[in-house]
Image 1 (tube, helix red, strand yellow):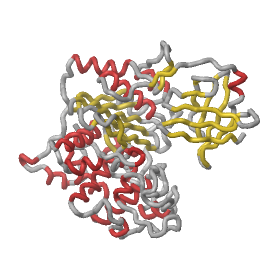
Image 2 (cartoon, rainbow, N blue to C red):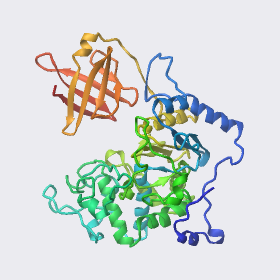
Image 3 (tube, rainbow, N blue to C red):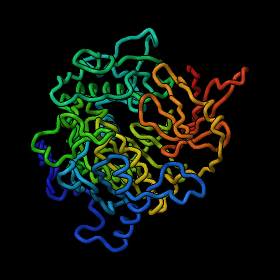
Image 4 (cartoon, rainbow, N blue to C red):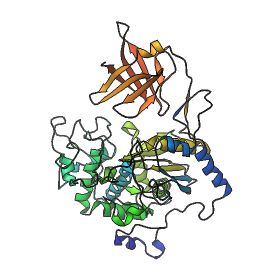
Length: 493
């Protein structure tokens, strides 16, 4: 297996009996017939998030879904009983090129965040950072500016890691090949050539949950100022090498000697991303290159650290803190779900032309990582996880079943219009050949299915749209029901 040899300090971590051996695949050269059967079953029946009751066509094979979703390559690792039971690539790393293998590199997108969060928590345990002190005390190259929105506000590392700091900028598009790449301070200030807004306070810290890649970029600068190390070096030495993530790096752009082993990113229409992978100076938020096997090792480290079996980066006490769900069901870097008896942790990842998903249970030693090389691959990744959940009898991630009813086309026509959920997000409802369709903010268009005369659902995600009339008996607004939240959208036209 080819390993990353970017930092000679890694050799210092391997001393005689102290040399850490990363988790192995449960079966190496020859997989058992039982595991082969599981792999085949995972790939045989992928379902949507919601299925129609009595629909005989609920399944698609992995190959069929890849073709339908324009995803050239997928890589999967499945964790079972605390070990990586299998890891396998499907499709190609580049159209017309080599196949995806278990060692093909993908950009991990926002899965970079929990891995970076682990490094920050490691520095907390070393006494070099505090979870609950003013981060401006540790920032030296740049500081969070005061803001009239939150006068006298103090932002803490805990708030940065849990998306409760009240900071702007949700995500980052990265920088195309050949484009100027800003420094981190330029990103923080929104100064050219940065392509995102300044990262600033927009709400009192701790007052609400709002996903913020900007907060993780502030955290990145904090780690740089405190450690006086380059971020890829710091992450390699504190997290990647101790866990055994030998095919992972935060180096941006990817070093030339590693590019032949990396997947090519593709757009949603199947065309390659122009110039290849984007560069992300916002490394903590979006800069990790990795494989499902390495991210599975990250998940296993968390599972084992909780039990005190392997604490290569964090103590059991700190790992437990990382997984305490707060606002938005987020811990310190990870989203928490499942039941109190059997909780799981997870994170999605989206970069230009790469979309991925990591899910793992805290106590059972089960989990899965799916990485794809195409925009829109996250829907496919969720479908793979649902199939894994079925084959391995997980308690979660099974499709929701809803009954479909018929609605008169004349009634459907009354729902056509544009509904504004926020100043930046709107939903266009159209009618095509008798089928009601929705399209959110110029994203892909998806069909809506009726479960009553006024309530409709998507299949690709578990979301419902309910239409309401005003005093004049005309449709006035809709309500989007999703993830336990109700969001109203006023009809504009």
